[in-house]
Image (cartoon, rainbow, N blue to C red; front, side, top):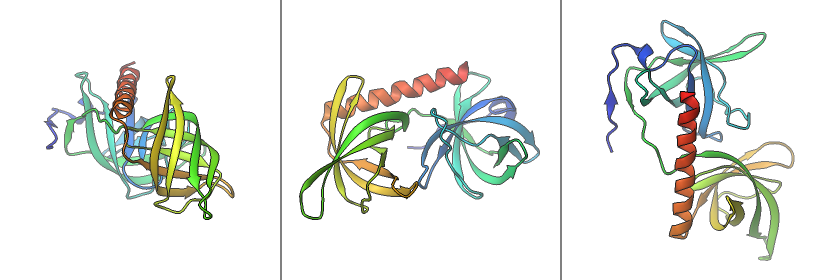
Length: 224
């Protein structure tokens, strides 16, 4: 679907110094939505604080990475634009990321697969090499209607099928999932990106509504 473009008279009608913004990291192990703040501006870019999630965890990016930025315009409209990390500036007391100034803006569309920061206890079920069912305790770090980021003290190969059991707002889920990404955090800890497989329609609808509700909460926070 083609994005609906927005045509401001001045770029500062959309984004300016002192503004709260959302950063979507589009690729890699830290793919997801993060918070940031516009610290300063120069002729060809904005200086922002490093993107962090609602629990204070940083989303790492490097120079050249593409990101999507969304914010609330002065006309109280949720607007987004694509940008690139131009420079990482390390100062004595802070680190700043320089992002390129956009040339096009478009209306932000709420998405079913918006990633929501959570910290949920979960149980992971899987079959070992002897085809015996095993269980491991896990933590779900973010969640959408199509997948999650999961922290586990267990090494899994990519494409391995697992089952995740967790409770969200007093509703218990048992979801078939597949490992699609892996990041080793330390000697024993791995973060996995998992894709949910076939899911009961009522369960999926519940997750979609949960994610949409969280997007509305983020919108209210930015307005505040």
